[in-house]
Image (cartoon, rainbow, N blue to C red; front, side, top):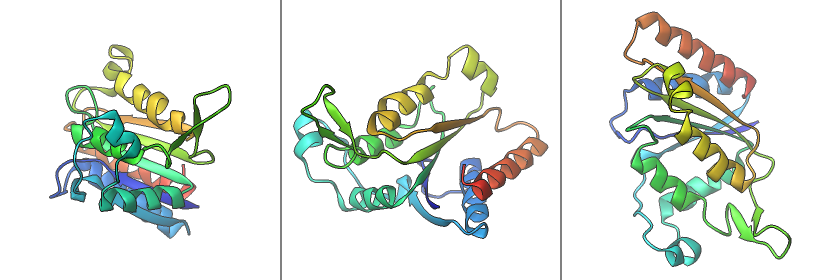
Length: 192
């Protein structure tokens, strides 16, 4: 399987738990015979979109075009980012706005629906790290930002199924981190 690992931590220096999770997934997937390509959002240079016209008709920056080629190549996407202020970091949101442009992710349709989904046949796993307990985020906040990404971005473009992994209390006990890294290795080996 062709797998694109999209690292969404905004810190280009790396070294965060999300980086270790993405590495564990990618290394296990490669060892199992899957092809893996990576996109590090923090290393890309792109502006924020400010108008509908720019989103629909503007030219994608070179780093975004390269990311689109990787997503197009992939059968499965693994998207890893930290929860910041209850949502994905602004850089990740800006990336998806640039990435999922008409002509690449969706196209106008003359049929009953307004948009044709151009990324059908791809699946995804969204991995989100957070300081609060994942149960609290899921129950009290209803995982609203992750559901929004799944419904309003990935599924809207045809990506399905989308699996979600919420990892809470990342500053917690050390053994929990090792358990999560082992779980990510299993997901990578199985390409899930």
